[in-house]
Length: 112
Image 1 (cartoon, rainbow, N blue to C red):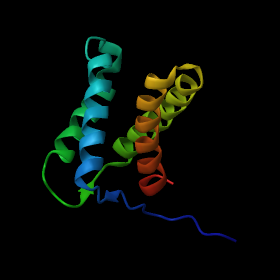
Image 2 (image 1 turned 30 degrees about the horizontal axis):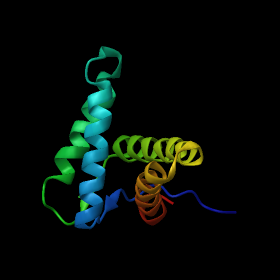
Image 3 (image 1 turned 180 degrees about the vertical axis):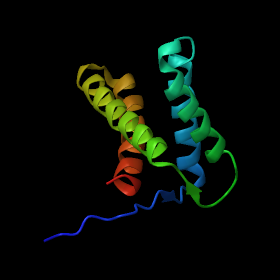
C-alpha cells in the first residue's frame, strides 16, 4: 500500500530564462483577467507569483494554490498552442513551436 505524502514540497529553482518566461506568462494572464471582478482570486494569486519570481531568490516557495493555478494555466496554454501549431503557416508555426517547447520544458522539468 502506497502512503500518501502528508506535506508536499512547493519549492522551485527556476533558471533566469524560466523566470523570465513564467513572469511574462503570468503578466499575460493578468492582462486577460484584471478587468473582471469574478477573477479577483486568480489575479491575487498571479500577482503573488510575479512578486516571488521577481524577488531574486534562488529558491521560490509557492503555496499549493499558486503552484496548482500556474501548472494548470501552463498546461492549458500548451494545449492551445499545440492546436495553433497544427493550423498555422510556416513563420507563425516557427514562433508558436518555440513557445510551446519552452512551456513543455518547464512543465516537464518542474510540474511532472
